[in-house]
Length: 65
Image 1 (tube, rainbow, N blue to C red):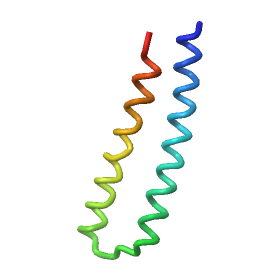
Image 2 (image 1 turned 135 degrees about the horizontal axis):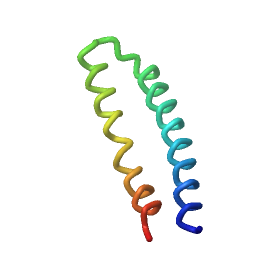
Image 3 (image 1 turned 135 degrees about the vertical axis):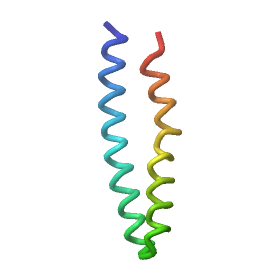
Image 4 (image 1 turned 180 degrees about the horizontal axis):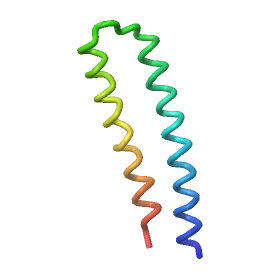
């Protein structure tokens, strides 16, 4: 039963963290005031990949036996 609770808890933390990351990434982009579309694409591509690095530790913890 503990493994199921860990997965549900981890999922809730992951969803809340992704929402906070999304708000932060968009707010940072607006604060930087980037108006050149190739830089927009580069910023959002990097921001879209960067969340996976901290999330992998949470996923490892969730799937640990």
